[in-house]
Length: 197
Ligand code: VGL
Ligand code: ZN
Image (tube, rainbow, N blue to C red; front, side):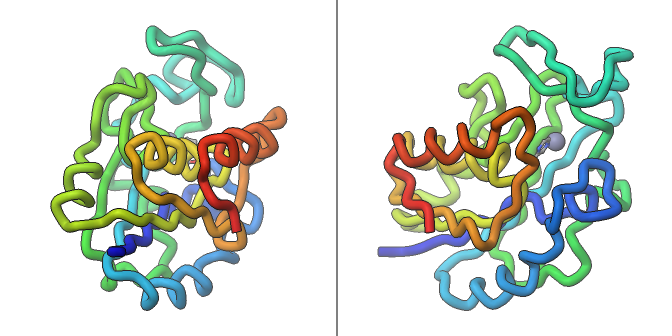
């Protein structure tokens, strides 16, 4: 089995002090760096939104963390975060980025958010990651990063649906946990056959 580590969105804006800070988001960085040596391939994802992105509350004059119905379904409206080229979009400075085989940017489509590393939030527009992993012979994926209940969970669910063997290292993830989202994400992942460790 060829095994890839996918490190989701370990960026400054998702760490304490960032625009969409995940509690203790920075604490997982040393463990992720250590884990990298156990994998054949390491992929880093980077949330990478244009200014005025449709997932930003400010774009709609709405309150952050309110909900909006998009053409593709309900969407949480977030504070502005991970704007292309901004400081907040940079990886956490201690993350070992040099080890990465691939850095995949997502969320660049102004009209559609992209939690998953595989598909945008319409659950239909591919990012190209599936093709990359398959052509490199990957059949097994371990996911770590931020946030457990959004980008990690959506990526894990899509990976399982695509037929990969999927594991999530919960000790190397941290959650936003908004409105029961963490419990829901864990239940959904388990139901989809994702191994949570
Ligand atoms: C994420 C909300 C908005 C994440 C990204 O990385 O989990 N969450 N954009
Ligand atoms: Zn985002």
